[in-house]
Image 1 (spheres, rainbow, N blue to C red):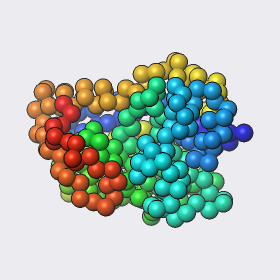
Image 2: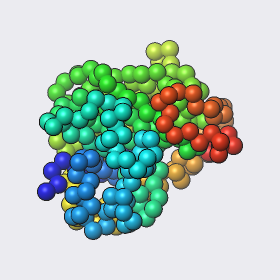
Image 3: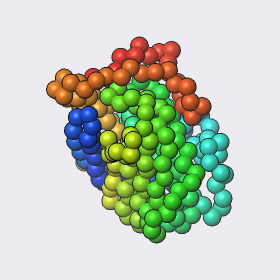
Length: 265
């Protein structure tokens, strides 16, 4: 029986405050996969494949180090090993007929309803992948945790490499809010978040996800990014920062050899 995994129907919101103001939001469907339930979901949901070719597909090699090793084992190199009383939830979207682009995935290490630690896995449009292991969280209340870390990975061509990320995790039984805010000199220059209402993951709910909202998935992330980048570049005349070669040890996938340093605009 699938106990912890869910499908979320929600929204992704992105707002810039400096040097130009700009805001957009899109409806978004995403999953919360208990990593120990992936094989069970594969067996019970006919259109979902775990490392198998099906309409919806999740591959271990699409995450973290890009290896075929199970995601949970890859996480053991970044976080303390999962204890028997704990479980890890992957917030992400699977491949949709073979394609998906997830700008950020979250790996949430839980004990009951309590968040212990997390990994924010960031993908840029150049094909690089970087992780922020978040091992020390401050608990604000029984459902909210915050933490911060310095930015050391190039994501948007409209941001330089300076600044500090401030993360907010609000996790309830059937609702989730995951926020990343960018601060420079103690001023917030950009706020982003995803949030959604969860429902049990069943064969029927996966079918509804695939058939009723095909454009509100990771299938449509890249076209949305390109459109918003065009607005920033052509209409708002934002300065473009070229992609630097990754230098951090937390950049797990470096496509520098294949990149020609052209931003997606």
